[in-house]
Length: 429
Image (cartoon, rainbow, N blue to C red; front, top):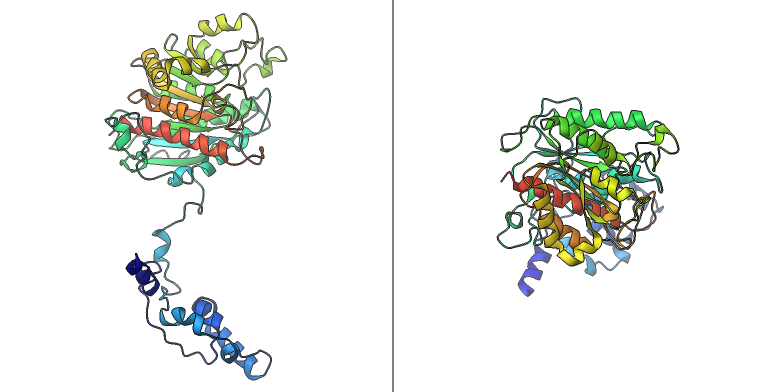
C-alpha cells in the first residue's frame, strides 16, 4: 500500500497523460500559481499581473508566502492536452453529467427516421390527463431517466434468481442489441383525445422500425414506455397488438387496482368524455380484443372494489388476480411461476403501475397501503425469464417537481425498467 500511495503522488495522470517535471519561467510565482497557474493563467493575464506588480498595484506574493508546502505540485506538474484537443471528452463521462437519457443510452430520432434499425426503444409518454386522484405524472419520464443515471453497464449480482439463470450472466446494455432512447412523444396537456392519439402515432412510428441482425426472434422494434398515467397503456397495447399480428396479448398488470372498472362507474358517470381514464383503460382494451382473456393477470392487487359487480366484471374482462397478500403465501418466486403458467406461450405485454410498491417506497398517483417491497418485485420479475415479452411500460411515476420527497421514486422506477430490459434481452442471447 505504501508503494501504491507513493506512485499515486509522483505519477498523477490526467486523461492518460503522464506528469512532466516542473519548469517555470514566470517572473512572479505564488503558492496558488504552483497549484492552479497552468490552468488559470494565460500569457496575456500573466503580462497584466506582472505590470500590476511592477507598478505597485498588486503585492508580489512570491517572497512573502512559504512555498515549501507546494513542493509536490512544483515537482510533479501535470501535462495537459493542447487547448484545442478534446479527444479525452469521449473517453470518460461522469454518470451524473451529460444529456440525460435512460441509462446513458444513445438518443435516436425514432419518429421520422424509420429507416434505422432498432431492437428495443425506450420512449416517454408525459401525460396525466386521465387521473382520478393525484396528477403530476407528466414529469414521470424525466424522473425515470434521472433515476437511471447509475445504470447502463456491467453485470448485476442479483439479476436472475439462481446461479444457472441466463439473466445472471448477461449485461442487457452490452449484449450487442441496438437499444436507444427515443425521447418523449410530444403530448398536448389540453385535450386527452389529441394527446392519446399523438402517443399512438408515436408508438406506431417506432414499431415500424426493423430490428438489427442481432435480434433473432423479433422483426420489429419492441417498445418500453415511460409514463405518464396508466391511461397511456391503452395506446401502447393498440400499437403492440397491430404490430404483432393483431393477436390478443397476455397482459401482466402490476397494480394496486384492477383498472377494469366499468366506465359507467369511473369517469363515464360524469361525462362520456371522461370514460377513458387510468381506471377504465383495461375495460376498453379487453372490449377491443387487445387482451388475451384467461391468459392475463393482475399482480399486487389490494385496493377496494368500488361496486359489488366490479369483481365479476373484472373476470369478464379476462383477468385472473394475484393479490399483494398472495405474495406472502406463494412467495415471490411462486408468484413468478404462477404468472408464467397463466400467460403460457402467448405474446406478453407487461404494464407496471408504481403503486405496486408499498407506500413507504414511492410517490405515485393513487397510493394504497400493504404493497410489495422492491426485492419482492425484482424477484417476481426475474422469475418471468423466458416469457415472450413484446412490450412493456411503467406508469404513475410521480417525481419532482410534483413531489417533494427524495429520488426513491425515480430510482425504483428505473430499476423496474432495468429488470424488464433484462427480460427482453435474455431471449435474444
